[in-house]
Length: 208
Image (cartoon, rainbow, N blue to C red):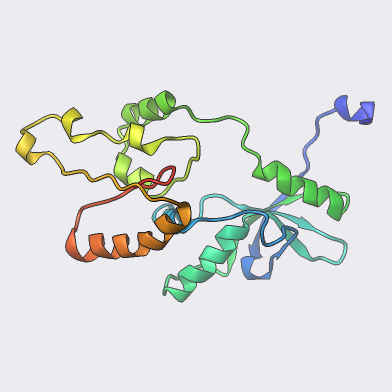
């Protein structure tokens, strides 16, 4: 049973924000804790390049001064890939230090940071894009929101204004599995890059 005293006071567990060497971060998560598809991996890399580093790591420092990353493991992996790709990534990046009594509480915080409480609705997302006049194709290359059905958001040629002859051509491909889809993505990306400049694709629920 929870200690009744914990419900009496809400206090901050944020200790400080400080730059850390992200290459030195340790992790509590097991390797199969989360999966990152090829499509989402590319979106996260695109977001890091386009939007820069905008979200600090969350870390816990144990009594031996070891820094455990509570949120940001996949970002460290992709930052390393960006360095390999020739992108200049700072050695030191900001991290928020969280007060945890021990490794057990720190592990619980990993789950807390991984939680998604509020969900974006289809209508809410569409209205947000419209109100703020955002470039939808550009946005979709950099975000991953599992609850959104992208094929219900992207306008079909019949919904676009103007001369029908000038409307973009759209092709829908349905794969038999996520594995098959992920295997095809690199070839599709290369095709669009070399043969179809300006074309784009999005991934949702096994469809592109």
